[in-house]
Length: 400
Image (cartoon, one colour):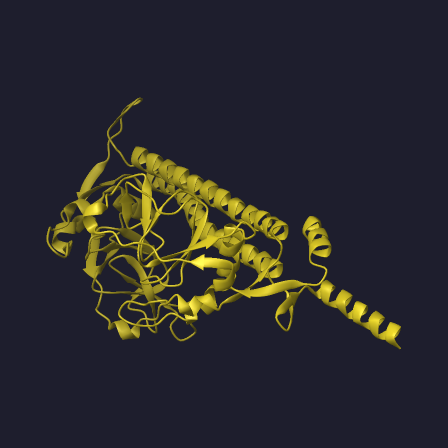
């Protein structure tokens, strides 16, 4: 940071000029490709109406290190390609001169993204015109200052990417570890020490299975509030929050509708189960946490019915067999697997929270580095404003 202050003091003694985007870069428009020209794999990504490549092409029309703005679809999204790419007709590549850093423009535009998106024309396909971004003004310090700002901000983005990769790898490893021990501990049969016998019973024999009750979507809140405080579970787990509960107690729930039917979650306390969730109530045979892990291990999705909307009936679930070992063994297995499950849950919660914290840290420093005090069409740092005021005072004193 100190080096940046020195550069600003040395190279920007009279402030930093505020210029229109159209005056400092060439806002170009990409060239359309037809579907036959695209492939699923290739050397050069094609950007059209989102930050996800539309496909790949055998040629490129812009070099690596080019900033671009999406003009339709995900209009207003800001991209920067580290590789050569093909810009299609709904993509605005920004071609910079030698005294403008494309990466600096990228960071500066990210800061202005709310304003850019406010200029998107709302329609069936959102669109952003070239004219609407040409007059967008951003501070343009000398190239040396631009490069120093880029280096600082890129350090934040690289650290965030590294941290995300590390935490994601840790989460994946922990999940595999949990799955290994779950499958090992719940596979009853011949072990190295000899034969380990346990009873196998159908779910219908040892558990009560009952689907929940339908509730209108308008009565489900996506966020938990004082009024909507009760968790609501559907076919894919937690669906939202409602006012009143229809279930009580710690029990596994099995999703019975949709592509993910057969997924198992664990509900505690008071909650609401919809018609797409099957509540599994123990008849006195299980540690409820052991039952949860055993149902996950059973891979219930394999029993779904085929069709446009896959389903899993209560009648079919009742015929699924699961192991019923002694309670003491259940307690020991549940304790081991719960420890792994808790680690995975903590990582699942911590990963997005850590990423969000890093994002806010980047945004804080980006806004600080790219915020200058304005005076007419010149953008000045606070320190520069003080210095200019001192010089004006000196000149007035000399004239007096």
